[in-house]
Amino acid sequence: MSRSNHVIDRIGEDESVGRLRALESENHAPYFRVVESTTAPVVHIEGHEALMLGSANYLGLAEHPAVIQGARDALDRYGTTITGSRLLNGTIDLHLALEAEIADWYRTEAAIVFTTGYQANLGAIGALVGPGDTVVVDASAHASILDGCRLSRAKIRMFRHNRLDKLEDTLKRAAGDGGGVLVAVDGLYSMKGDLAPLDGIAALCREYGAALLVDEAHSAGVLGERRTGAAELFGVNADVDVQMGALSKGLGSTGGFVAGSRDVIDALRAGARSFLFTTAAVPSSLGAALAAVRLQRSEEGRAIAERTLANARQLWEGLRDAGFDVGEPSRLPSGEEIVSPIVPVLVGDDLRAATLWRRLFDSGLFASAAMFPAVARSEALLRLCVMATHTREQIDRAVKTFADVAAELPR
Ligand code: PMP
Image 1 (tube, rainbow, N blue to C red):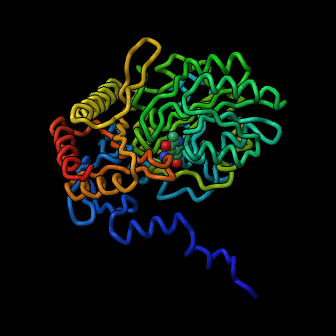
Image 2 (image 1 turned 180 degrees about the horizontal axis):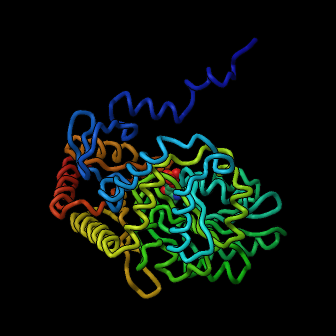
Image 3 (image 1 turned 180 degrees about the vertical axis):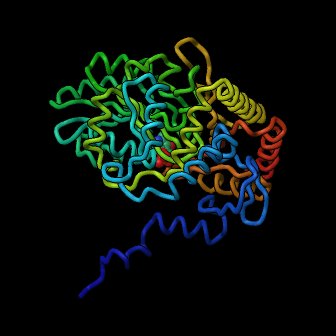
């Protein structure tokens, strides 16, 4: 039997595997580095200390005593795992408490918690649209949105990132498709830290009778007066039909959620496959998430989020003043400018980004690198994420290290 196209044999020829192996063979890869312990925001990584600037722990809640206590209490009360799906034996009272807290926070009729944020998008889109419907997606939307669209078997129409004119053209075309239309966007984009123009997007959805899903994975707990995310900043919560969030980033745990009307949540409880056919989250992650949500709703939470945004501004301005291309702040309808906790340093060339990453790593700074195919060719970037727990001195040092390292690289 010929094995010429055997799925295992051909792995050696695979482009993405080859790319990863080439980077790893020179110990240059910004990927799969091994953290041995954390004293956040410093991590111990492969035998040395690094200032962590690549974590989505924006609010520093992963180390907050109240959040750790929430995890511990849940572990003590329920054990390590529930070992069952929500539908059958996997629902515990902590799920209901967390869902009620999230619904109250987002001022929606109901909420539903998933084991991961990825599964929340996958399940929500798949449960709400199907063959004959159309999903209109921002071209930079997160992979979990795109995968949800693919699994739903609805028609997918992409529009150019954050371009309202292109969204409108696409909605006009989608109206001819004949089915229901769902628009899906990130509230805060995870690569470049820019916000979706949600006021314009919501207005177009209203005009064209489309439903709107906003992914608040990176903004939940961080943005807005009530810290519910980008939709709140733009004052469009009432126009968002499906507000998805992650518990795995600012909220210091793992998991995802959707907040919405009773109808939406019942549709997900009945039909979201990534909800029905997987094990419920471990109790300690629910306990941590509930403590984190309660904290972020309090005055202490307000102060924590303010520190995160002040740190973001300091890092963004420091790098800009040092001559780096850090993009533009996002602008709200009021004219206010927002620098999000995700600060991109636009580098361009993949090799330059990998080299810069490695030198930073050697100098005690851990950043994230995004290279092709995660971003378009020649649009490689380093992505820095601030935490509330970074000190002003640490951020100053990060800027200085960046400038020193970049000065040594050939132009
Ligand atoms: N949406 C966005 C925008 C994300 O960046 C991520 C995680 N990278 C997710 C959803 C998935 O969340 P989780 O990591 O909790 O699965």
